[in-house]
Length: 186
Image (cartoon, rainbow, N blue to C red; front, top):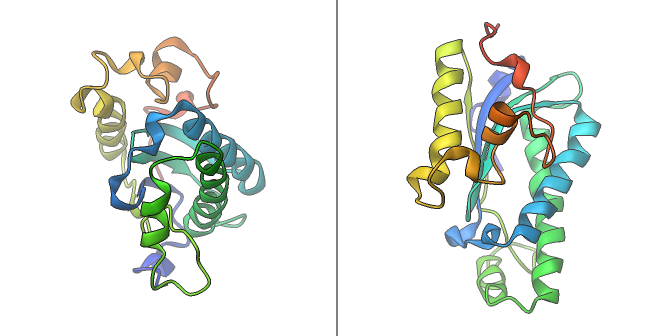
């Protein structure tokens, strides 16, 4: 799988990331699936020592802004591991639940050598956060995504969003570096 020009971004540290479940299947409507994704993110956060500056887990995808240390792992390294291992954990959970989605994941794996199921769409989308304006634009987008999707009335009403970290200082789901907001990105 190619890096789509990411090899040129090995010194970049701030990214807006989106990754999506195949066929936009809404597995993250289930809080247990969200918790499994969060657990994987926390695990790789320790390994790669990246900071989460914002996030939201929507029913079929997640967005986040992350600050990485390229010497410890690139955004590609981080996303490869999070996607791979969260898929295993979530699929195992869905099997125990006898989820209606399992057939979709098996069909999606057709054509992939040595793969029985496929959870995430190939690749992920990333944008380098180049300045403070871009950071605030993406932060606003992330926090308002559940409102725009009519999942909640206010951003802080959505459990799996950093809006709660920023507004209430609530880091009970995952630690978010809220002190970063407003600092110039270099």
